[in-house]
Image 1: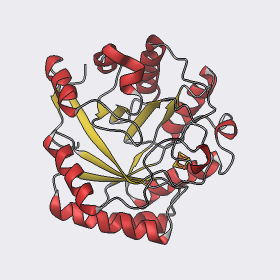
Image 2: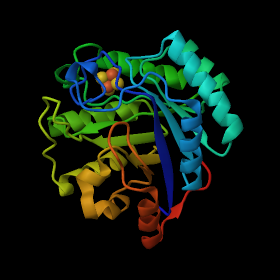
Image 3: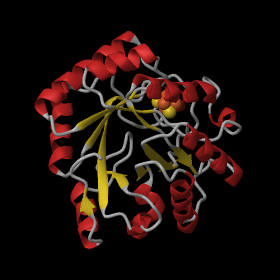
Image 4: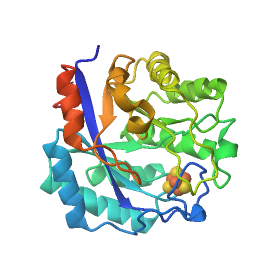
Length: 281
Ligand code: SF4
């Protein structure tokens, strides 16, 4: 069993303004989901969230923007936020998650203090056109390659429960492995009634076996992170994810849905005799 669990917190610094049509995403303006929508979160609020994450043991703090990719304005906003957080909350390792990005844009983020970039493949190359028609899987893969070339740490994973086959899951995991990521976040689709996509039909046992499959397929990843959908997918069996190979979780709220209060996760880890990682290897 893994003894140290890496905690990460995500901060939606721009929400619900995306014009893409990803069928699992309530942040697309196309589906009119009932969520908070704003262009730029107030910097004081971001600092407050970062301090709360730090005080609850998070090492990673991810600055997320809802858009297809970076433009000059978003890049400026993320860089300014990173500079402020580096000064105000230096204990946190800053991650950016801002969609497709060029090597130049990634280098600019790196200069501003970002240490890692998260860009998920979401699903298999073959299934992706059924999930999104406004941009391609290949663009996503290319951004991950750019992250590796930029020298930033690559965090890439996907979502299970979108209606994909087991073969699609295996294919996605093989693609992820080919990118040699440091961390692999796996999400479980959390249905929103505004979305046409049918609710996730995975059972808890199937989901646990997917955590295991992820760990077995990508053994060199330092972290297998169970991210969005954890509470809904695993319910009172969340403690079992660590037996199946997960050694990282997101604490606090997700992008548009609430997580459980951070202290409950800390209590769970304590009960399991698992330590919160104090530094990144
Ligand atoms: S590009 Fe990102 S924010 Fe936009 S709809 Fe797709 S998943 Fe959502």
